[in-house]
Image 1 (cartoon, rainbow, N blue to C red):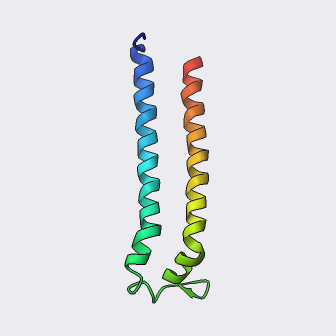
Image 2 (cartoon, rainbow, N blue to C red):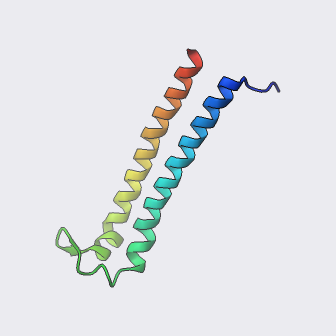
Image 3 (tube, rainbow, N blue to C red):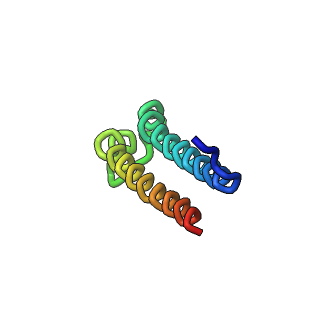
Length: 91
């Protein structure tokens, strides 16, 4: 298999860097939502969201909504990154 040209390799490296960065950010949000709200539930009891204590709301509904938002954001952002990468291929 032929090695890609230096310009293509640079674009590939940039695309991969942006993909890893996005994934790391979304995984951090997932960790904050799924683990830290449960781990610090006693400390977060004084925070209310829609009239419910924050840890209870996150366990009941909030985490699922955040996960759905993470999936949607990932799909939207990756579509844009891939489109930008392929637009540079044609130029």
